[in-house]
Length: 99
Image (cartoon, rainbow, N blue to C red; front, side, top):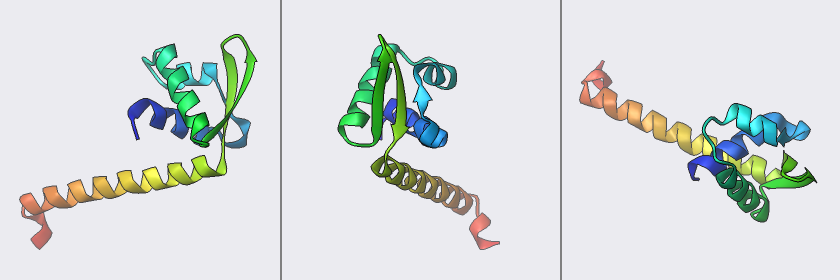
C-alpha cells in the first residue's frame, strides 16, 4: 500500500468508531497536501476500507469499515514480517545467527 493511503487508513483505524476528521489528518500526518489526502481518502472509500461523511465544504469525518480493519491487520503483519526478515538478514551477515 502506498504511503499516504496507508497513513490515512492507519490513523482512521487507530481512531476506531470515533472516526478521524480533516484536522486530525493535518495534525497527525505531517507535510500532506490536501489534494493528495483527498485522493487517498476517496480511493479508500471506493475500495470499501473507510466510510466518509462530508460535513461542510472540505470538512469530513472518516470511520473504518470491517474490510479496512482487516486490511490494516494484514498490512501490519506484512510490515512486521519484512522487518523481521531484515533483522534476520543483518544478524546473519554479522555472524550473530551462530550465537
